[in-house]
Length: 424
Ligand SMILES: NC(=O)c1ccc[n+]([C@@H]2O[C@H](COP(=O)([O-])OP(=O)(O)OC[C@H]3O[C@@H](n4cnc5c(N)ncnc54)[C@H](O)[C@@H]3O)[C@@H](O)[C@H]2O)c1
Ligand SMILES: [Fe+2]
Image: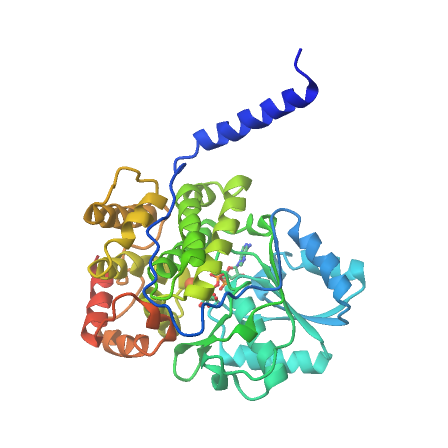
């Protein structure tokens, strides 16, 4: 008779093989690494100091906050999350560890400079010594901006661009509820300038949160449309990071695995929000995609999406989803070879060296995924007006996210990309 240990090993092996054999993207791997840019100071990798992922991560955060010895938190969140009681998950933990808090629920999707100033005023009034952001990308970005102003002074416009802060921001613990923007781990804060109606990109390693928390239990309540939009945001991060001019093997590995997971699990997460495996894998996917773009940066999908968000206050993920196939078709004319690994990550193992076939498969897959998860067909459906294309294009060309796009478009080409996305 087999010993107990042998039996356990066999069960484990069977269950692993069972899982793998069911996995439609088994065996794919990215090997066509590209290093278009070598730089003169080496590559930098940016991550929060501590990252807690998986079921129970929220409790883990409580233990860590307790150890750090902060006195009073400003919880930066939004009214919806307060209303549905989601925020109770963190306030209960803070009560348990006897850390005081004040709640700023004034963040709205596409947070503005005005909301940042309001949050800062509350932080000062309540004398908070650290910040907890609770929600999706909007509360995280708003919290980072508040944290920057608390220690650096001035207004948030002063920090638009790359590495403009001079002092570390107030510590931020970012508890994430969407999958997602990756904002809980990134060095980006995207804040709308309420006068110019543009989204400012504050890109600065000093806005990286201290602790990032991705507990999929907090993501189960996302409605379908939010799951689709945020999932496509994550896919856009992975693809833009992969084709970025400053990608490297570490960001490539993160990006390709994120693509693989999103292709496999996003449909399930959208159509059955209670599917914990899909929620869990999507939370890893958005984290991996965040890791990829945090160091490799993004491209023209984001540069253009930010303008749509700033001008029409549209959901960020939906803007990305609609622009993604059009901008990648444009990029593929310059770097078709990169689409071989993307196709492989999407589960196409019969591509060989046929880059044209890879491009076709990837674009078809993105379009059918968009269609299956209820993303609008085009920008016209979203109320975008052709008379705005010129200004949108002009501003997109100034967005720092576009600087690493593999193909540099002219203004006319950006207008054309908006036009194609409008009618596709
Ligand atoms: N900083 C970065 O690295 C980065 C990257 C990409 C996008 N962004 C920014 O992030 C913002 C978008 O963030 P987002 O897409 O995560 O959404 P969001 O934070 O704007 O939230 C959208 C809505 O979803 C609700 N919501 C959040 N979590 C929920 C949950 N678990 N259940 C039910 N409802 C929930 C919120 O209350 C809100 O009403 C944009 O402003 C975008 O520019 C930032
Ligand atoms: Fe994004």
